[in-house]
Amino acid sequence: TYVALEVISAHLAHLDKIENQVSREKDLLLDLNKQLGISISDSTNSEELAQSLNKLTEEQVCDYFESVHVCVDLQRNASESLLREMERISQGGGDISMSSDVMDTSACSSNNGVMDGLPQSPLPSKSNGLERVQRDLGAQF
Image (cartoon, rainbow, N blue to C red):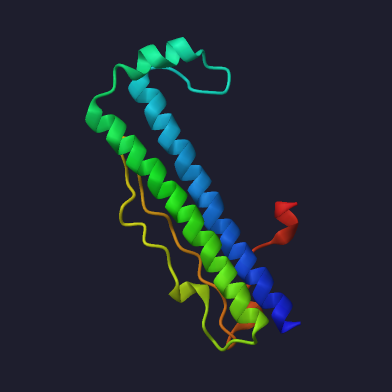
């Protein structure tokens, strides 16, 4: 039972990180939309987008590139962190939790197309197990 609680807690914390990252990525695209004066979507005309992109300075393009790179790094780090936590759980590991393995988000901000740092979700340690699993699963499904 405790193993299941640990896995659920680790998975929920991972989902929180990913959901926050996706929200920040959407904000990044909304900021780019504002800078370009258009709404970028799958149906955006390539010529219209190319003309709008000419409005961006080299610095704005570099900021956007770096922000997207940070997003990808944060997603990879979150996934790797979950995998490490699951490996620890599968080996009957001690009180180590992902809360000590926080992602470095100092490179992110939401100013001019650069993303803000993402909030962290602590995982339970064996000392407090069930009471730290606070998310209402019913609301998610």
